[in-house]
Length: 188
Picture (tube, rainbow, N blue to C red):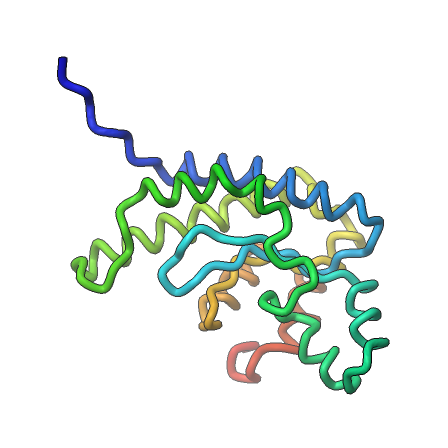
């Protein structure tokens, strides 16, 4: 009997796994009783499986109270790499990592069209997952939601981070973030 080849996870499968994982990971954050203003799925330019990163007002205050110059805390405020809640919910994201690993490998030797398609599938699943959770009010509603910036961020940063942030956030959350991190040309 011939064994069928393993099924390649679809974008919908990635999205659904991400919804579950982010829900679990953010639930861990909510147990801290801190006020989170920044929750992102961070990935690389190769669209590897993401990690969840977050900043809270309390964590930023702890940073400002640390023996760092005050300017350092403002530089860190929107840094997913430096977030005190970096790779939060790692175990919850393990199934997501397995699904990403079962997708075609991203490498510089694949045809550009295939690379771009794979990249779009991976980032699309991440963005769709955050959008679905946001639609159900998971990141808050009304004025509470306006205090939280959610995003899918590629590191090193590129212009696509701003495009996703615009699609995922209410104008109040977006305006604050853009005023502090974007180049003036990007805010137009």
